[in-house]
Image (cartoon, rainbow, N blue to C red; front, side):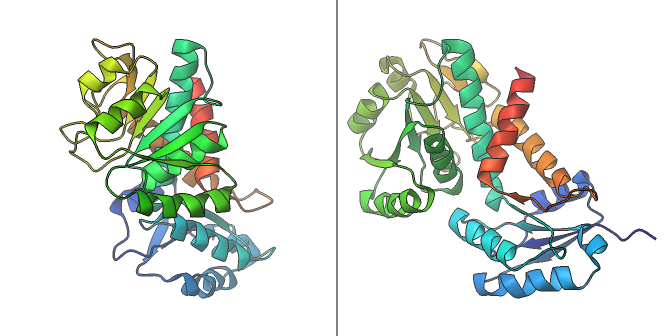
Length: 303
């Protein structure tokens, strides 16, 4: 009798995400077992319980999903799980805290696609400004964009020092060169937009960050992307269903939350399915770069 496929869901949060549980079932896992309030020091022991309770063939029908709400803790947990395994007792591990890795990947993939389609330009060398940059989606989007060669600035809306602390750690860890810019006033935001090619908005839901008047005045700006699906939108004039639609009265093309969310959904679904094949020789360790590479391929197929 074939053993059941099991996804072990580790999260530092109080609760496992129902979204992730549903996604795992829909991807084909038979059982999902959540472990909540998990501390980093506990990951190695949990991982070894996962792999040593089955034969090598049984371990191939297991996977570990890292949830939570912090992208740095999730990456530390992924590495701790990976370093606790050895062949043939090893299974795939996928980190996607709060869906941030797949959401950020989908956002930058959409930006890349529309920048090429509308302007025949690439992300490399462009100035990308990220609002809501200390949140999981904004921070991850900034890292992905920087990895693609963009000049990325994280916009501080109240505490420059808080954002600088994040940037210092990320620049060191990922060998990138993120910058911090003060965007605490409307005038400062207008100056930022005037010097930006691309704007990413991943601020708190229901908070308008950028006005339509500011978009009209930003003559260099080409692409804006907003993950806020709660009215009012983070970027005025960008509807949730926009997928490379020109914002009325501007030369800017907008990408809304639903367009990003649809690609995010397919990306997460496909990555979960990648953990299941019995014939894969080596386990997969899936994080934001794997998510971006897949989202990029999927977006090309949609274009």
